Image 1 (cartoon, rainbow, N blue to C red):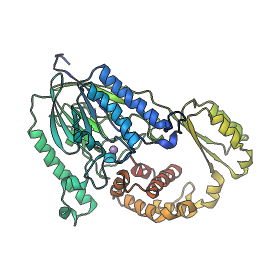
Image 2: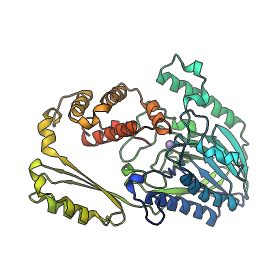
Image 3: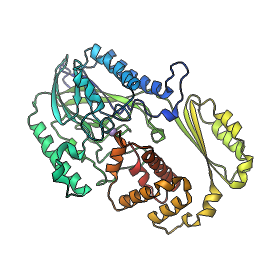
Length: 458
Ligand SMILES: [Mn+2]
C-alpha cells in the first residue's frame, strides 16, 4: 500500500442474506405482525447498507442468496428492495449476484432479475458468467460475475444424457475453465478487477471442523479462482467467513452470512468485508455485525443425583437473555420423574426463543446395544438399525438409505439437494429428511462424522 491515490476504490462485499429464513427461531412480533427473525436479518442488512453510505463506498458487491428460495413472499421482497433502494438513491453502484437459493429449479429466472428488468440505475444483476465494466465515482472497475452453476448453465441436455453425475461435473468444470479464460483474456490489464462468484470452493471450511472432501459435490478448485488477473475474489455461498488464500494474493474471501441461519452457525462471527482496491493493491477488513446470539446448552444428567438442579444450573450460567437457545439434555428413564418441565420453561423464558430436547440414554442403549461403543457395524447397517427404531422416520427410510449409500460410494447427492435448495421441489419431506439426517449425524457421531456436513443445506 505504497501509492495512496485518488484511484483507490472502496468496496463493500456482503453475501448470503437469506432474508426470510430461520423463522422457527423467532416469534411473531405483536406490533409489526412479522416474525422477529425478519427484523433481525433486516437489522444486519441495514447495518451493511448504513456503512456503505456512511463511508461512502464506490461499489457494493452482493455475493448471492438473497432469500431462502426464488419465490419469497412480497413483504420479504419489499423489505429487501427498501434496503437496496438506499444504495440506488445514494448513487452507489451495486452488483447483485445470483446464488443457488435465488434460482428457480428450472434455472431460467432468478428472484433478483427484477432489478435488471426495472433498470435500477447503477444496479447490475450477475445471472451469468460475464464481465461488467463499472464506472464508479473514483475509477473504473471490472467485475467478472460467476453465479451458481448448474449443469444447464454451460451444457446442453444431449451432451449430458449418457454421462454419470461425476462425468457431468468434470465436463462442467472444463467448460467453466474455458469460459473463464475467455473472460480473463478480454480484461483491461490496467483496470482493477474483482471476480464475484457464488461457488463452493474446494478449500472452504464448513463451520467448525467440517471440511468438504475434495471430489465430493460440485466444488471449484481454488486455483481456478486464484488468478493474478484478479485483485480480489469476492465469494458467496459458504456461511462461515474465511479467506481461502493463505498468501492473500489475491484474497479469496467468503464474508459469510450476515445473520445466523441456524444453529450450525452458532459460534461464527457474522459480518461483511470492506475492501480498498487499486490495481495490484488490495487491503480488506472483516467488519463484524451485532447479531443475535445463539446458545446450545448441552447437559448429560445421567450421572447426576439431582438432574433438575443440574439443568437449572446449566441454564443459569448461560447468557440466555434475548438469545436463541436450545437445551439438549440426556437422562436415564428412571430420572424422568425428577424433571419439572414447567420450571425449565420458566428458567428459559428470558430467551428470545428456546427449544428443549431430552434424550433417554439408557433406553437407546438397551434398545440398540449393537450401536454401543466398540460396535463393528458398517455405517450403513448402523443407519438401518437406527431407522428401524425411529418409527417417525418411516416414510423417509428408503430415501435416507439411498442417500447414505451414495455418500458412502463417494457419489454425491448434491443434485437432489440442489433441487431442495432451489424453491419448487423444496418439499416438507426433503426438509424433514435433512433434519433427520442432521439429527442422526449429531446423535451417532462415531458412525458417520462427515455425512452430517455432506447432508447439510447451505
Ligand atoms: Mn448458496
